[in-house]
Length: 310
Figure: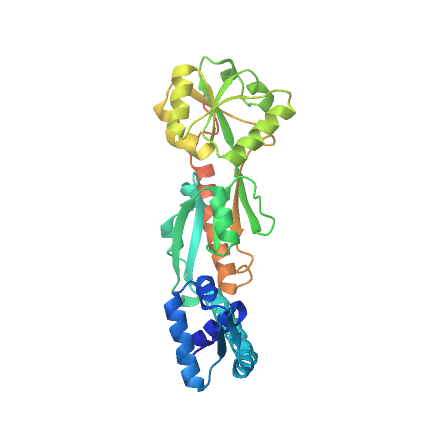
């Protein structure tokens, strides 16, 4: 007598029909009928009366239902606990990275994580910020590094740092004469942004709080932002480390910092609440935090980094 047979028997007992039970547990009617017949042969007596209205349990069927239910329930509990234990003690981790900040999470940094000589495998998956939150929340990923404000309050959130946003414009644009750009300075200018939905909503709210609706054209990459600034006199908004990589290719485009207190670029580490308390996950959090911040600090001290251009 197998647990699987008992599960099938209990479903038939509940539904009073081979057909309905087969539909509920997604097996063929023939396979379920055969399983019940074999179980009856093993028990030695019928478990159900076959009637025109369906199946009804015999006295032996009633006894088997009473004895089988706690067995099946105990097996369900056992499987659930083993599954949770296995997840909490695995040494393979998936780390998410929000699109656009791949610069800060590198596979080679994750490969050096080996607490107390333990063999650990870490894979990095790139997703949008909302997918990262969903995967961390349901336990499919242990943690993720994302940009923008975290929406799910159940997640453990660790603020890593905030980066400087820059306004990009042609050298003959009136904004180029300013050393620091304020949100209100952008009123009336055609803006081009490569920005995710969450940060875009934040930006629009900031503009509206200053009395204007921004004129925004959204694009999918920063090179297009630079091209539209250079060729069509748009004002672009970008992030310091991206500006660092592209500004020399567009000599007629200048970058000016936007007031850090008005709008910045937050980067956070989100962690699965079900795994956060594990010692190995705590060590992994420290490792990711250190690796990401090392790159962050290197950028800021790189002599070629344009705090702003002249």
